[in-house]
Length: 356
Image (cartoon, rainbow, N blue to C red; front, side):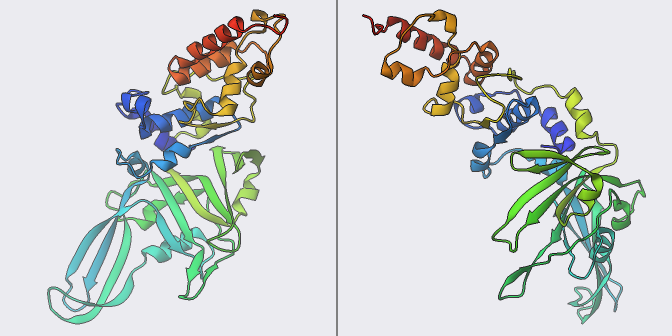
């Protein structure tokens, strides 16, 4: 959500939202755009992307690869005949051994250093010493560094529970082919932390850098401002670095335009700010909570002295004027909300009062 490169790619896709597939079923692009719009509107404390997660295996154009994808180059050099073998491998993240190293630059240096191995040469047909090196051939827009905090010795998996220092700025040129010798400075904008004793238990939370001197801790629905020194003292599990020149999230939200025409309530007595919104699940009219929110749109002046039966009281709990929420619900339903509320009004008007 706070990866600006990803958000820019999401906006650049030639895709009208909502599309027909999204209206009748599922479209990952439309669903993610919904998630972004609703989250940035700030109408809810937290948003649940359950429907997105349930469809992750569906084939789609992969903008994740465009944002995070790069390429490794693996070089093999036969020390007997000087034969070179070069192969390329896809890069989405870089997994780094940290057991004997305590800072990220040293870990990357170890990852890209030349190793001595025994190998069979395809040219001179001999088994002998080789030099092997794996380096970055094409750097991605966003570098994701994964620290290997869990070690498996064949019997148990233990956690490498120690602090590994990480810089605010990372020069990836030191770990690449250096073909063009172009500047490859990256800025740290997010880290993920694992709290717990093992890979099968614990809790994950994150720290997001929305501006150069503005960090926030995201722990489930709780978001709090934190100092930079506090972030740098964390035992990071995954770190995200954006290429220098990428807009900060605080700048991006100033220019972000909604992907779909949703009207999100900013202040509302009917949908409180602590309400959890499940993207893609609003069309389920059987959901009791959402139905209550819809019923709250019935204006009080329409029934100033109306007395309700027991069944009607089950439906009509709160009587407030929430015109902005009505527009929001109507946009989400594609127009079905207005007809739903009007039908409710007609039923209440046609129902006899207790005096009758």
